[in-house]
Length: 254
Picture 1 (cartoon, rainbow, N blue to C red):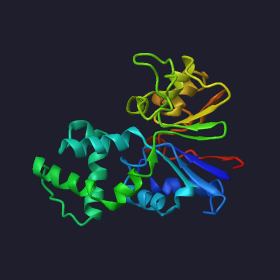
Picture 2: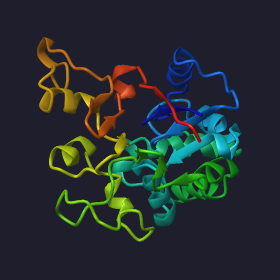
Picture 3: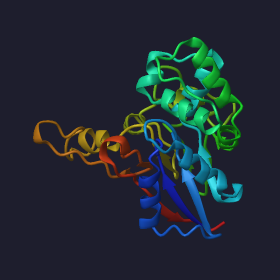
Picture 4: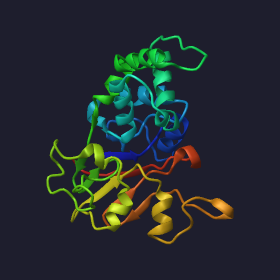
């Protein structure tokens, strides 16, 4: 089986389509799509992204839940948007899904009643729920572990939780971890490679490999290609900024 691995698509469908095509994706029966979370928010084509992943059979996709999926569920539970929902793109995704589900949006500034109507539309959306119900905290394929941020660690540390595979582990916290920093601080699993997203790879290139800058400020150079080292592959190429989505393919016998 060939595993096509991407992270933090954030609603950028054209970049996703291009990345998969460049790596030889043909939707063949021996190809499995792997998302390391955060399929939604920021880009203008979250609907197309969700339609794509929902069209794939369950046996040919691995969908890791990211912190942005958590942000949407938190807004639904709260019944209103907060300021960070605007900055993180949650509002945009919710409005896109509401429009897709036939809700007419008002042009004037949203109030809490409008928030509630939009979020109720998302909560009852088959498009959203089909995707969300297909997500998992992590997945293991032979020596590869797929996560969003990192594996759960003990509170306030980068010491891995020995029970990290448990459903009771703190996955909602782990999704926010900078995996490259956790890896640097010794949070590793012997004999395994952890594939993660969430944190822009230029951070690791700049501060761990001394290669370029975190951001291309003042004429500098930032590298958003995958960050690869012993036991880690970080994949978030910050597509909203770089306009390029990282995709890597591994072949693993079933």
